[in-house]
Length: 449
Image 1 (cartoon, helix red, strand yellow):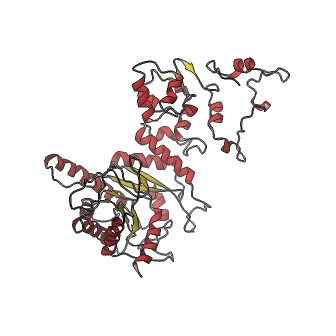
Image 2: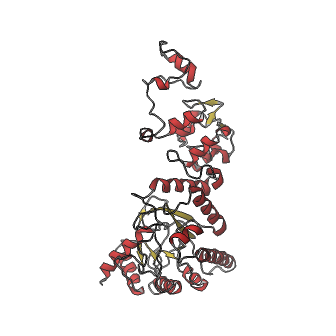
Image 3: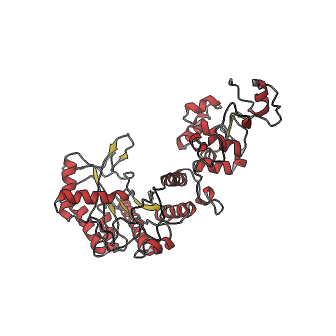
């Protein structure tokens, strides 16, 4: 099989792995060295200055000794198989870089022979790129569960980032769909990577030229929708991974129904909206100070389909709102829908000089379409409906979703009697501006109808 055919097969086989990112690595360029990760990074990602950069993303091989039910490369599947040699991967990476096709390499592999053999070959690739070709570009390497601690350590000295894919969020799910894998074998490389990072960090404090170990940190991937695990279980696992192993990112991949089996769900399409909600919840864990058990609980183990997790949390805790933007502490501003990290920082900074007016908030980048229902500005409330959970939920739910079949809500209409401002109004009473403002609209609303 020629190299072009191998590349077609193994690049296509790698598309199901989404656990790649460029953040965190700053491998400096050295004279005589090929490539750099300075202010750059990885495939189909955006750098802080807005540039989109690319990466050669391939599997070393899709031959596999495991028979995981959800995987396209499982042992019992009749798919095209191929395997690169170490030299072929190195030559592809260098040639693609010289042609300006890529800025780095994302290298993973199915398990061939055994975990140690697979990890050893992956390590040979990165060692050859760094030592023989002096390649300074970004390298994201997959750590193989079950591989020895020595191989994980050696690989981490040459890679910018490593990832160990958990895939399934519970031990019961692993036993159901991936009986060849063991939970302990998956978490051990994560632990080894973290310990080595801490050890090398201490060495760098003492010796300036001590080697760097996985400067971009580690990440993992969870498959969403292949098992009955709830969003609460998945997000709780992510929270523990961030706390225990200092992961940079947990990636969520909506299950693509590539196989059929009695233990697999009968899906027509991947649950991408659920994946999106989990990413939003994950963002709240990492940057907004939320806990998993605040966003979800046993009574509500799944995220709201129609509203983002932050808005859903705010509506479920409406007793905490509205808050006064000129007095509220920073951590409460972060919990207001429509106010992000930068927005909260700008509010805290600006209000030191003078009290903020409602019009000032838009200039600070606050999404008032959502925030207006959860804040007051100089004691005035500017929402266009009362502080009522059902009314706010109705008005914040996207209109396209309101029109879906079997949806309990309706699209608001100026001409529908179902949405009269007050049930006390007579059908014969004329609807004029003063009637509507007195009955149902906030006192701060002064706009024309």
